[in-house]
Length: 286
Image (cartoon, rainbow, N blue to C red; front, side, top):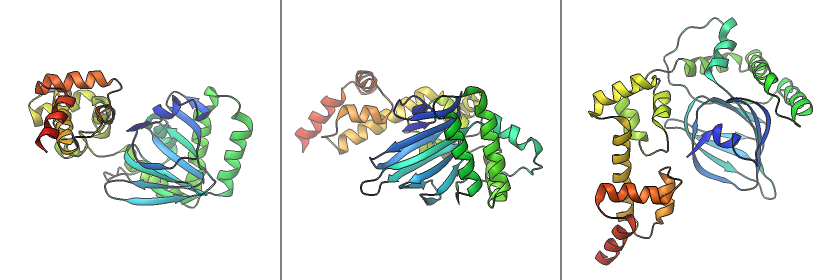
């Protein structure tokens, strides 16, 4: 799983046009298609597709974003796939902004609280948005301009609000800002395998870290970290039994272990046997 925007900020192949903390604009271009990439968006994100197309999946929706379109993705977990035309590239501009900046934007907007599920919104580019991006690239593309970042992002949000999808955008962003608390058990059972931190789970379920810990212990009678470790080891064991040829390094990486030896030690501590030993025993039983 990739974390947006953190992983793109740390990727030297992605051009940072504007950047201030976790707010900014990044240019991404790749000739390799993306295949069902699980992505955790820790900030609200606007993806402007210049070439190629992007397929966005949630638990409830599926949408295709074509060249010349923009998709608003509220904070959440998505599955992204990128399609590349022959000889072309998947080129996108990614605007991302935090909840604090969104609250500043809403400062002059009269809203009713909506406790509805936040969801993506796809809309077409406009001449105003194209002129805005052209100005940004002309004046800021050769440097990361920290001081201008938040002001230019607020300008973008105001442009969208005044455009054809303004009311829909405001409603979707408002939902995301006031997202309801997910039931801990429902959300965790669906997402425990993802490479997320306890802080990420708290954020996604609409809770502070302390409230998440309290609600989690009430549901599972143990702290989050040991519970996640146990469940992920159970899932890893199941996959090793079902796929004896599965590479241990790939399995470790899928659960967020950058160091395979750490995964092996955790697995052996849980089951008294290494992943490789389990695979060998399963092959003998075939």
